[in-house]
Image 1: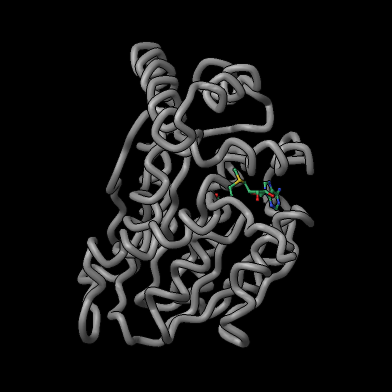
Image 2: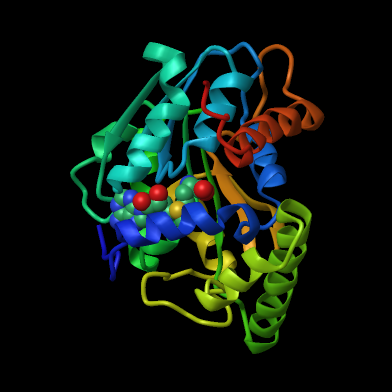
Length: 277
Ligand SMILES: C[S@@+](CC[C@H](N)C(=O)[O-])C[C@H]1O[C@@H](n2cnc3c(N)ncnc32)[C@H](O)[C@@H]1O
């Protein structure tokens, strides 16, 4: 597969852990949206492969919300792998955590027979041809009912949108800083670290236009490709192999999904317990 041109470092992992709760727009809503977009009923058995599982929040929310789902969580950062492991260890054999290099083809066998491939804020580290190759591999290797879901930054279609994305992203980070920390300090760190990729592009980030990615998903073989959520250049989009994505049995409601998403993010943000005397 094509390049992830600059590589993600352990410093990036540490900074992401510090900033994510204010720097990811509407994080709980994004997790809930991904959970609800799965074309499976609450009690169905299906297998998910997560690309770049990071802190393991989406992984844990999935395993709580869908009690018969299994997961392979992949990441390239040792500290992120450890954090994902902590979040999924209570689910025993339902979850496997493994190292991978997104830009290498060595791990693609992990996709064989999967029902879901999803990736949150990771595949923008691949260039356009790399994303295209990934969508093709996933479509070929996964099942007839399978889905590829992405939550990620996308390239603005023009300068007007680029400026809007940059301004709205700053505003969201500032609002989330006040809401979650009671002050502006976390937002100041977001500014100091130049985390707003629409204001301060970084060679590690290679977002592609949303419209191109939907075309690549269709060309790869996904019968339905669409965008389901967007805010400040962050989008949730994906492809379904089957035209009618019908679930067997009860569906997860958005309200239920939000409560699972809230539980995992709130636990992450909670202060550590006081040491016992
Ligand atoms: C911005 S974080 C997102 C983490 C998590 N998915 C989330 O949404 O919170 C990007 C993740 O992708 C992983 N990553 C970035 N480039 C990678 C690569 N080339 N191979 C494997 N993992 C990579 C990082 O280690 C990190 O955990």
